[in-house]
Length: 143
Length: 148
Image (cartoon, rainbow over all chains, first blue to last red; front, top):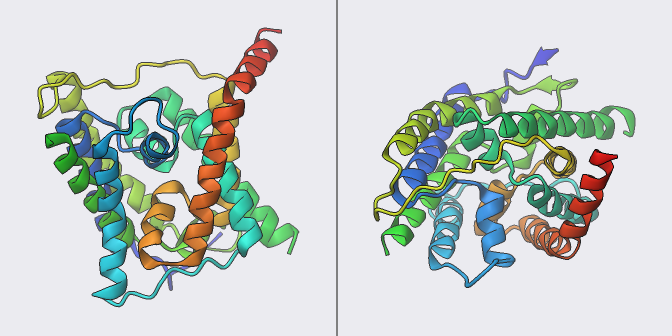
């Protein structure tokens, strides 16, 4: 294994992680909810009851920093290099899989692990392994 | 009202955290998921930092039991490690590996007005609707298979 020292950003990533942890902390202590992006978004697009306004405010808050980055900080936009078909297929898998598996990177990987939930530990292990495996196949076997 | 303000603040912190950490960029995520290439371990630092802050918060939440509005904090109490959890995580991980995008960064990147993010988010919505249609049936099939 070789470490990509050129792109490795330990401090910025740690700092970003602290902010994400702070987001999870205030959402659970302030609003009694788990910071899970897939679950919160599913509550907007496929709500089980009446649409809850606070979920929309969460989404506004999540998108706003990118608008700020793009138009004020002039941060270059992220590159989605995988192509339309892959994004479409992958996105459907993400939408379906996160509902069946009750969470994604934030809900299981951050909040669940922080709660020492065995369910989340298993889910995180599986989705990480699947991510590693798919990238290995796409980049090193199929290419 | 309180819940909306808290949710807005949580969204902002989450979004800025994803930006600062680099996770908003699929290329960064691929750098982490590509173990056999030049490996970028940054995302492990994102998770470590996030968990370090969230861990005490969930301890406090478990003790206090109530949020700012005085409502009961309901932490998930399902302990079952079952087929839907495992299969769902597998399907999600495959989609994550294909795109380099998980739901939080996908939504955030809509703010860059990038077409890729829009395609991804629309596809996520389609997947969520598909689950709405098929999820109950799939869960009962999985339950039968587990009992057999």
